[in-house]
Image (tube, helix red, strand yellow):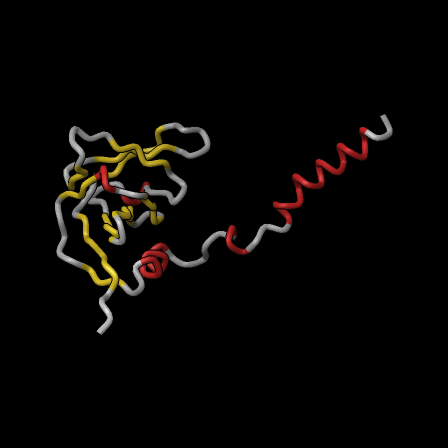
Length: 138
């Protein structure tokens, strides 16, 4: 029993330590959502807006709080500023996309689910997709 108590205390200390000494990378970003999007798009040039993107080719998506959804397709970032419901977007939301084809279009909606409870928390009506590609060196 004497060896069990120190082991339990050591385990508790190890669990608590990461929260107390979390690196700055895990700290909440203090920039506004527009500033976060601007930073993400730094060094990129906007192209002509498109109505659809190939969802099957999408590598990842990122929610910019109350502002936009950014889809990565290869080296291109496709920014979608929803026509409706953008104020419901949370940077910790899970996006649930239901489509009838392999394309995601500006007429589609995306459900939002809470990451912790997985409960439905709203939806957004997508807008046009604006491609941002790296600026070519001159």
